[in-house]
Length: 136
Image 1 (spheres, rainbow, N blue to C red):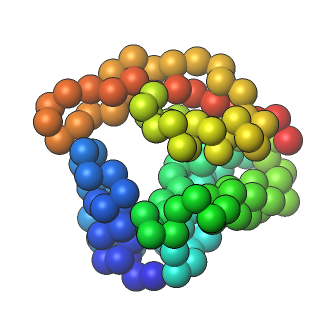
Image 2 (spheres, rainbow, N blue to C red; image 1 turned 30 degrees about the horizontal axis):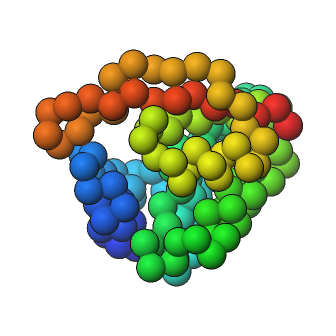
């Protein structure tokens, strides 16, 4: 999947949010503290610093959802983060993203907080983020 296709998928999966450009994805793919798992149906992205990791996003093409693909990408990211010595994994997820929240809870992430008005929407509105953690 090219950076252009990643940007396009991001836009389709999150139409109410600001999109990340192909150039931004190109930069992230080169970063030394980024981990990507890219498949034909989507991608997962995490980053790390010392013994902590952060799941940044898991994007699944809408036509491939509800087939275990999000779980697959999440497990690959977690395995990589664990293998490089991460002991805690964090993530933020939109408070209205029921599918992602269910995925993280199913995989033993614990809600540890909430960030008020964290995400900026294209409409100018704001959305709260739930903060989750998993101890490896």
